[in-house]
Length: 291
Length: 322
Image (tube, rainbow over all chains, first blue to last red):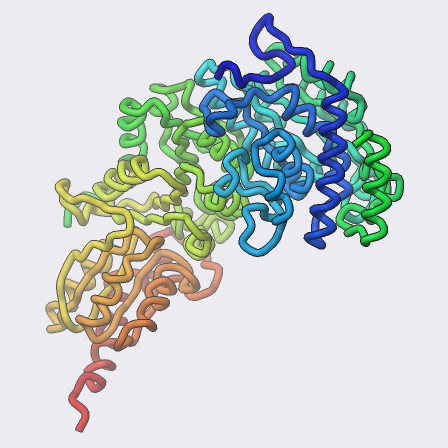
């Protein structure tokens, strides 16, 4: 990997400073696009798409070292979308990054489309793992980071999970193992939007004190505002947070971020906007992001 | 058939160590089951390629999928009862649907844990795994075939479930035998009845065939080590060349080898009657593995009796109709 490298730290001592205005523009486009996709498909998870858009934009435009000429370059960074239901945001991000044609987003969940409701690595070469059932991404991420550690390789592994998702016990099996193995090449980002399908997380199965829980499991943790570019970039550029430990970024987000009608309302986990709601949402996003 | 009964786990572990010496991508993953997988020597030889995730099967299969993503060839090993039941969704999604080059090795399957009881019996694993698309499922019959199958699955790029027992069995194959994934192996030709078996039941099927021979019943014995993808041609050949098929497996009669064979037999131009021998849809009582196999008629005498009855029942059917 050489000229196609991107990232906060592309190699030791060489840093590129991401343009925040550009990141912001991408995040706005990802939001608008994912809402259009969900609306057209009549299916999807708009709340989580919107809460994770800034994290995804940061990862794909400022963090991940990818080889644009070879999606399966053995030395690429791995990104695993453990919250596999938020494909509206994931596919929009891949399109924004130029990794799939933007026109293909119109096929989202249409018959025989590559763009299944949950990602399939055998159909889309930029997808690292088939996810959908929750609690699968982190164990896979532990395996990836272990492989890199065994090889003494510098490539890194990133896993994005939801917060309700952490109610699945497999995450904590993986969390224990990652700390035991000292996987400093592994970073989990928790999209802490505090809402799951049925209710707020804290009314369902309490997740707080979430950062302390990760610390107790042996991880080095930073809690940030998951919609602040400065905080996102600062956290990703400080990885690993501590030598010999896996890193956890608890990204406090707002479910439905960017659309006031959708923000922080549990019903929008998988509600589909009406034509009028979509129109209002797109107008609001256009205004906010200057698109 | 050799006379000395051997635990196939020995062939499994020595072959894995040998292969690891030739291919540095091979890693072993266990769920604390260092002894029951017989992998102490792997750990001693390749400590950096030995991963113990602790007692956590869901994580274990996910870690295996991640290791495969990172270019490794993971052999993910544990007692079949926990491995398949606890991690079934990971087997379906992370391994089969993702089509990862991961080798899942279920140890001490079937009734091998005998006295420990139904929590530890793994008599549903073939039904579960066989229903999953893209997953190759193999049940070796002896040490020779276990060694061969290990090499074959390492060479094959894709997800595999290898189901091993701990019940010692004599070798039914000579060293020159060459196992092929998806290829049945006709151990004995005959024209009255076919017995299709796998795993620890193959040596018992051969003993039954010898007993039937003395009674004047000619028996074809087929070792169906690969249950998925199933060798359909071999099944259809049994249906064409004999009057009936008996399947024998150390598994529930629901959805295992018998089910797989029946699914093909009903599509044959001239379907033949079948008898499916296995554990008849119950949780087993307390007893040693050998006691339980005898209890369920999964021995030479039981197979012999079923085949003899089937042979008798099908004689009339093949008489020319006037």
